[in-house]
Length: 169
Image (cartoon, rainbow, N blue to C red; front, side, top):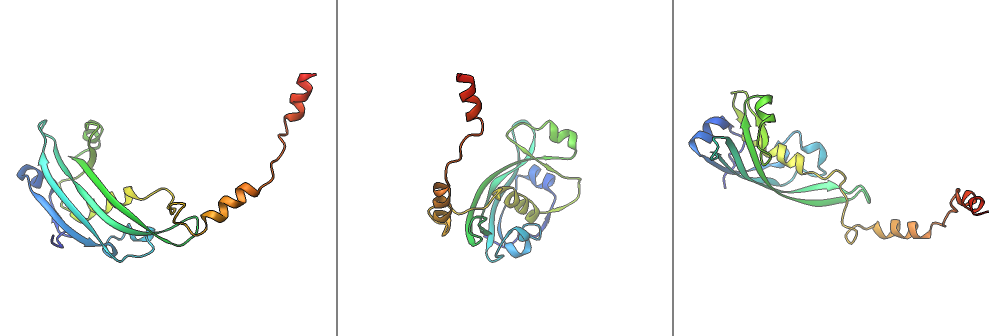
């Protein structure tokens, strides 16, 4: 694989020609993604096929992989998060066309200008981030502490128990 993911492309032109792009890009070069990461070391790897489906829809089908270092929100320590996502993008030139895409495509809105391949990869990595990053309970150093606290809390009496007793009478 090459390191060609920063080049500018015209997605519609590549789709009509049926071109493939494969490559890697350093995570540190993905400016919108880096604020979500604890470490920008490493690379994202992408394999993208630009083509046209049987219905005439220009599209991008491929795969994006990366190992991201996030902050666990339970223990506040670093955690690795593996991303291996498949992409199916329909290339459209207007919001109206995006609304009419088949369900199996997400829109890639282009305005006739060239775009960076890295932007497609970065968008997919951002979409793959978890809503809340947490280790698996077996891997988190403080998971046992929180679980023990929940079990140790005394049971509180239901405030409506009195009303239930009155109803019985």
